[in-house]
Length: 365
Image 1 (spheres, helix red, strand yellow):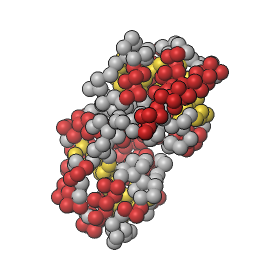
Image 2: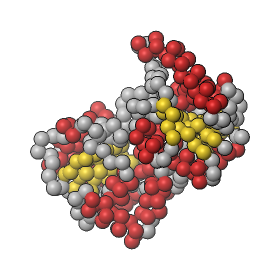
Image 3: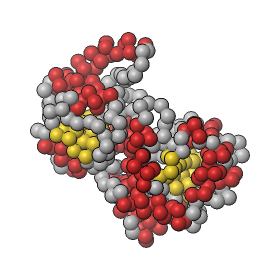
Image 4: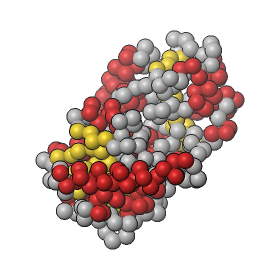
């Protein structure tokens, strides 16, 4: 069977697609990815050994703008090109993960009468996946509270497809000897002491200026209690406050294998994208989450259950300042508090959804 998988823009869409693609290919199926030439998929998909078919980037604006005026023409061209790809490549199933890449793929698949499977990462479904669910034979949900269902098909809560490297690390973290070995190896790579506490700060694949400036402004106080690896995002190292950097406060722009960073972390300070939330929960890794304040509010909803259980601490974006770092994050650097947060996350029983999503794909044909 040949599957066209649509995901683009951010790692939150692309990584679950790659995890599911790997599971499908292990079962003997062929997976072709569709994305853009400018999104993160342009790097991640070829690196994973998948063919990437590119289309024009088609934003789906939420309010009046020039992009809204251009939308009909762009969408028509993309759907026409995609219909040709579906026919020429003899595609059996379309698998979409949301974002601007998925909408034209869903429309093309509907016109070609090709089964659609939708995987929704967030608690609050995006525009593209709400469109795709109208015609989908199957919808996969990461969270039970997501209000999305296949209008004429089946809907299952599968969890988020996790990268195999994350699943492997989760298993290693349950073995104290393996966990220590992974921690020592990762700390050596980044020049940190594995026997001292380590905080990881990351705004995701694009970085987050609010996290960069707010956290680094308190860096001199933080390093009295813990070491820091701060993943700034590409081109954002200038956000770091003057004087913050030291042997105990290190920065990198981007890390492709974040599992190595997680392997040494005692606490993560981050946004709350669905992929990040699912990975941290699966690893039972305590976090301070600072949800992105724009969009439709999905980031807070993604993390809400873990905030309420005590696994995560929530700080609103507007409140994330150096003073908040001093008053709310430094006090968390206590072995008992971190262990309690980790236990709450472990109790949630987050599992890898790649197998369940691959099952759905096979079932619709």
